[in-house]
Length: 98
Image (cartoon, rainbow, N blue to C red):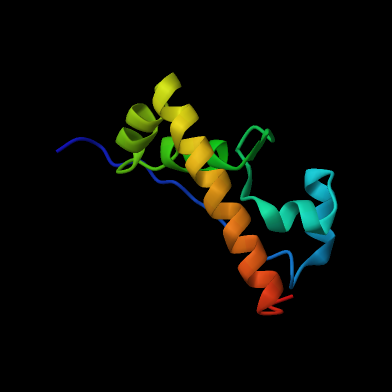
């Protein structure tokens, strides 16, 4: 078997650590609407690009980034993600989760 790589991913909840919103140079409502990822180089990735970044950094998930990162597939996935994220945001607002 090949050498396994280690990928450390840390989840930061902006609702328990509000100061983190400033790390992505945005307001809290914008951050609530999309997944935000800061990679190991300090680059910010938002929305579906954030998922691609996570998958690229995860040894067993790189195939997802390779397949779903193909330009036309990426566009379709981004569109689907944006629809899902908008619905999830509205649902959380209605349920008063914040």
